[in-house]
Length: 334
Length: 148
Image 1 (cartoon, helix red, strand yellow):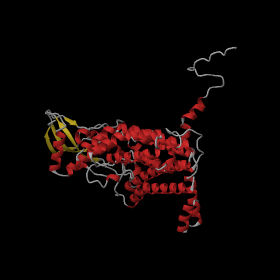
Image 2 (image 1 turned 135 degrees about the vertical axis):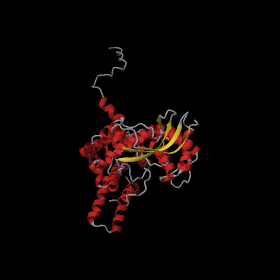
Image 3 (image 1 turned 180 degrees about the horizontal axis):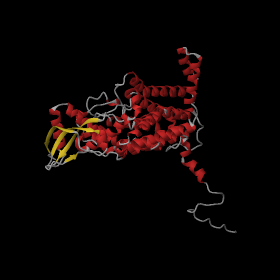
Image 4 (image 1 turned 45 degrees about the vertical axis):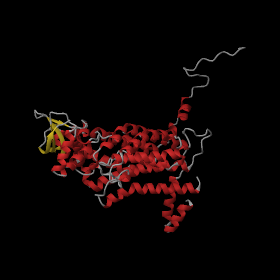
């Protein structure tokens, strides 16, 4: 354990098993990782946020025209008694994709990524401050926030970085990745607990889920929005919804399995992805961050995605040249 | 990784874990805990809406009596369907003056000739899913002429 952890634990007069447990947690969290793994996560999250902020730009600007009496702020905007000035919103909406692109490139990471995290947090919170809190971008905001607090996230794959051999694996590259993974797990656990706590064990008998799917599509239809053709069709088959409900709760409460790594991790990520695909199919609700795969990226050895790893795999046999390369000229004198 | 960095990593991680977990703990203690962003109790899809539901909405009725569903953007100036629904629900709950204001606001976005009506429709969600699109009951709370 570090000195800091020792002081805390000694102050708590924790028994030896607790100290051993804390030491194991610290060891897991701070275990070394290669710099490229964290850098690839930064690139993936930055690229996703760039696309998100560009796609949402018109909607963000539209907030300036919303009726002030619908203002119902949450999170960091909760102290505001009125919507933020339109000019502020427009500037934030315009700046967000630029900052996100710079995060992707790793340019001036220690300055730019925290700025991007603040702007994106503001815009995503604004989206949820008109009477309905959305739950599709929480992980995106949290992951960007973790990257903003990880100065080492641009030690590789970054524009303007001095050329040189890559740094050795270190805990400074590991803890943001493990924290990002832990946040994913905790988010799904909290979601599953909410269903069981608020809905009770009746939630898994299938009727609740069946009514939820039917109601969500009905509401979309009555409010002139696109709805799923699949969900209403499946509602006729009531027997389907008990296993679907059980599967939903198992995926959410079983998220901790991903922390075991290996096949458990892969199995959970695949089933979680299938779960979100199912939500899209049955209710036309897009959880884009998990469906893109970026939400689950922290669980994997992302350094295998970097271009230099591909070049190694694409290397031609000795003596062979790629078909697009010009032919070599014969040397003078044979 | 030096001592200061390790301490910082542990501090940030502990704070993040607590922040993400606290809403869940609050939910365990009190299911009605308020939601937030990005630290959420994730209450979506937790409660059974029931088989019969009442859904407020705003429609445009042609002179021939055809009912046209209006989009979230026409209803509430947003692309988010749930926020549009909340806007209508709050207007209905707010009484005649609030619904009249909503009606007039929507009427400005609808081209005539048409009557804009704030209505509350009651549906059997299972029957609706099976193809029965007519409401059990449609109650008009306010109406006004399109002015768009």
